[in-house]
Image (cartoon, rainbow, N blue to C red; front, side):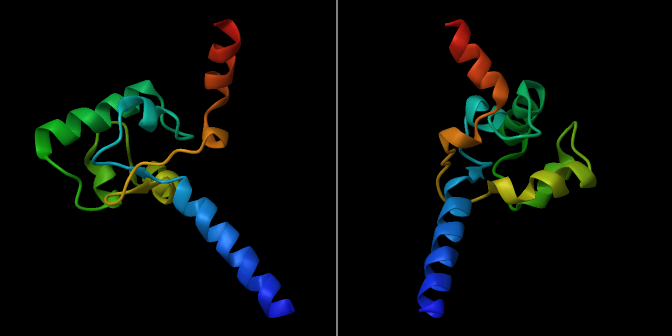
Length: 104
């Protein structure tokens, strides 16, 4: 019984982690902006870097983007991938998104 419960919990955690990843190579500015720690300026910097240099080879390449250093990359590394699809859960949206929804 304990093994089954552990397997279920592990599955749920791994699924929710996988669902909150943003592909640096295909994400829109809005997708990037939804990630905690990334605002519209950093989101645009990622897109500009991608247009100029092509696809990201790995997440650590974010250190080459204006506004990112090793510490900021370390904080957001788990939110990004360089392959697969972008899948931002609504629950991962920033508080500012919620404020904008109220104003509409």
